[in-house]
Length: 467
Ligand code: TYD
Ligand code: MG
Image (cartoon, rainbow, N blue to C red; front, top):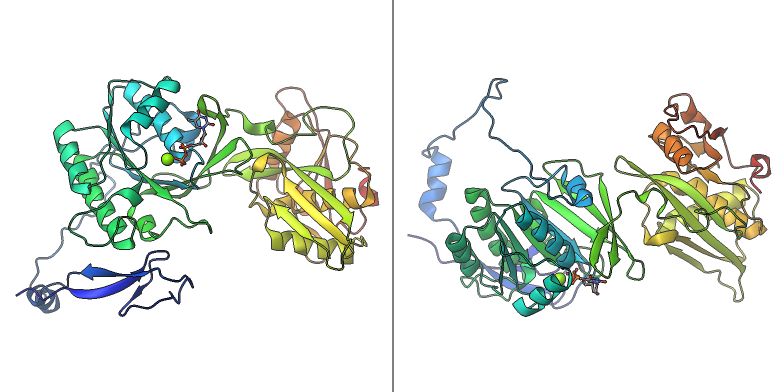
């Protein structure tokens, strides 16, 4: 006899579970987010059979080299920047979660993907709970993305979505967004952890049994987590984030999990009047003052950062101003605040620059967020240049992580970075001396040259001769 379902409670924000209700979730400190879910306990018979070893044994496969593997050919969607992040194209049967802030362009990106797929002859079901079919139609019309292979549905009942899949047999499914979908078997509201988990599991069953690629759109909370269902991240094959500063036109697509490819790759897009336009050669997109020759203000420097296997030249801007009230302000965008605070201390103690009575504003041009610690050197140079009010005169760029004693630490992929700076027409690149021994730039193919300067420490900035 099946046991009565027992009640369990879980937090809709972080997914932590509890045996009794409470007003505040101790895990994420949010109020009013703990809700009851209903869990069916397995029947006693099932548990006993597992303990007694009565259950039939599982089928095992030896990893033999001659094994006949199922064909996992990828389908490139024809949007280079998206295919690159997916690891070369869409894998049939893959379950992909696309998340990002509201209004960042998730639905737009998927509409492009859906249109490209439709043009290749794939039948696509686009089920939206966010926008009405008419809204999607209007947008598709404006972007010139009308295609008879795209079927739009305004459905939020997961069973109805499954029934629609059975009826129309699409080759690709988009669910925008998973937080609006509900399963009628579960009493809690759409968007709660239980609903999201259950609906995703139901869709996953269909996806895997039909070898149907599925895109789920997921919302992100203010602190950047996929709202409620962190649980989803375990379930899906790929987790993609679409990010960018709201005021900047650039959007970066990043894979944070990918069972079919690497997670280091990024795709760069630009939000324009006709949707998200792929930025095919983003090499110099993030340079403002350095893209042209001519006088530059102080406080500007550049670095070559690595986003996956792709080098990007990025401009760092800094403004150092006298503090008016006692407490100096440190405003950082696009970089880690603590990292910049550390660099300020290093500059003060090791390079003799007095910053403790100054406000420091630091930002990355183009709305990019830099994770690469090798940007340290360039950030320090931008701050020093602004404090001394001496612009960096030539087309120079800086790569390297800074240690607490002011030493320039080694960084990976130096050869690729040097080659990229040379390609972008930089005259000089300052790099960690220690990495120079291991990595040499690739030979130049376009006749350009670059001077590579190894630097051991930032204790004497004058010696670099950049201003
Ligand atoms: P949308 O894809 O609806 O965002 P999400 O699904 O992530 O919430 O994108 C909405 C924003 O994109 C909207 O504020 C307007 C902008 N946008 C453009 O600038 N150009 C366009 O062609 C489109 C379709 C949207
Ligand atoms: Mg949307």
